[in-house]
Length: 262
Image 1 (cartoon, one colour):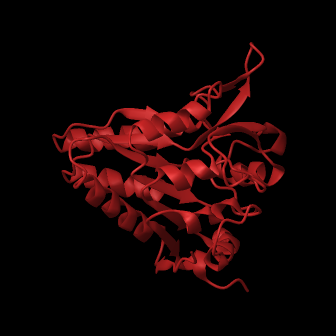
Image 2: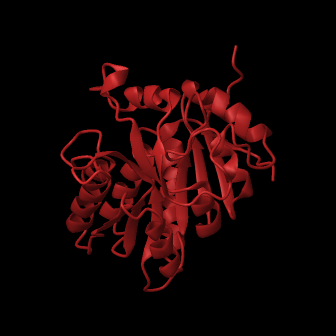
């Protein structure tokens, strides 16, 4: 399904729209947990900032469960892989704790509200079990998505990822690793970026999400905007096009991303 983008002025406007959508959806699901699929990195930061403001204003986010889409992994002593040290600045788990959950908790406390306290991450020793856990909880209510600048990766799904991929271990390509050098400034050389990750799969996103929001923010997302708005179905060479096959899909871009490349 070809998507019609909604163009907003800037990153803050995108954050406000998505934060309002999260609060609205949470208000109608009853007492059960609300699973929010979350990326780390720059794109979704305006959403997390706006959501903290909603919490400070009294929005009840106590049932929010942060479901992280990916993380870097490194070899473990037993020959497998483990998630990188959560103290590392590039750890996605650290990002979830410090950049999403802690601001929400502080904002909720200031409003006298209960705070969310759950973060789910995939176990690199049993990655497919992550899909089972999500499915057993009723699926992800809303998944926040972003597209890689240069290769269209979504989560850590690399170009060529099959449509039926579930949560899995992945070897990261050079383009994805270079994109992440911009996300984490301490990566001053490509060889500093981990070579492997664990990620939700393409099928995880499409099959287990009730709604998704693809966000494209900044001039560096113009190519992604062009590829995704032109797509009508999943294109393996640009994995973020899976948004065209998702239920309740919304495509948001700021003016910079939507402007025609000169």
